[in-house]
Image (cartoon, rainbow, N blue to C red; front, top):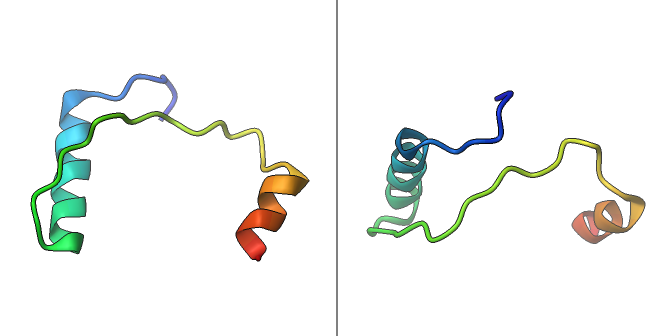
Length: 49
């Protein structure tokens, strides 16, 4: 996605997918895009551990 706006439709889709995975209703309180500049070495090592 090129622009950094999260549309209401995207939030509805995300909420439905999470609810289907967890098996219960969810409420998304905040959503944001993660920078695509590549992970730093510190964050990459934290994910590996």
